[in-house]
Image (cartoon, rainbow, N blue to C red; front, top):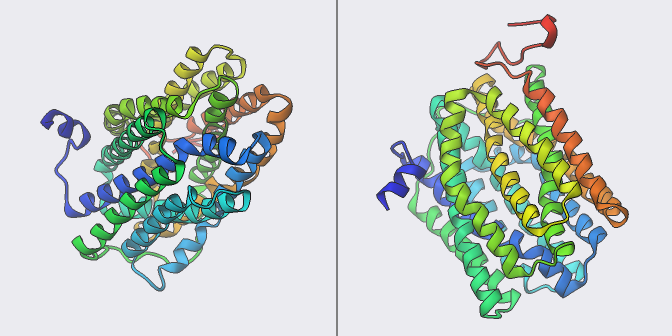
Length: 401
């Protein structure tokens, strides 16, 4: 147990770090239980097809597109309390998913769940960059990813047992994990004080020209990740006939691996730098998405899914890159704006590619490879040692800092 703890948390934890990790665990329980069951739930209970699931996922991303509004809520409430409030909303949306079993019902609960998740993530990202020192952020973000994976393991393991061997009803399972996340949020509300911020944050919509590369990386990251989130799992259900317990076991294995690798990846980013980490990630994703397009073997598809999930763990380098180049008072506003940018493509791509899926699913993954290729080109513009005043390097000697 001590060995596991040292892997997850290589550095001493402050109370602020413990607070963020506790909320991250609760978020992992609620979100992952929703995610792992939603494809089977929508197909089995509401008879969804590829176009329907694309529409549902686009609806899910609308609150992410509107995440820039999160900065204005700071005028009325402390950022820490807002993170808790939206975590509770995520938990309630998850709990209600198995109760409102209809086309309109699943759209409603998805919106509630999604508002909670996206606004919680906006504030969590901002607080992490404000509270954790620059040299420790990659490692801490890796620890947060590991905690979310640990929560996912609990969710997937329980779902696999309850749905695969216990034949539990969806409403009971969604209710169980939604309630657990809600209770953890209530505990965090009473257990932790409102921590003061060292730098007063801007409370307005904010775009800065020198953050342009960060915005571009965020946009393409959201676009190609959305294809993975929506269609890679759906591929397993529709093409290879995975039952709910098989999907849960696949997710379980992914997060078990990620629980150990995420902190290691975080330390790797701190050692090698964001530029190297992002180049490795996007090079791997181009190959993986091209393989998705031609895969016709379930075992090969599983291997691709696991590798896909591993490479995405390196994307936390975008956050640590931004922390190094940003003004301290810009972190909250920029976190909100970055979520909106991340979801511009996410709102429209699931619907468009859902329709493409009906005629040729392979084209969806070829498009994802192209998007990952654009991200790879942008990664070469990241400086080896990013900092304020050195936000980007230009190719072919046009301009260098």
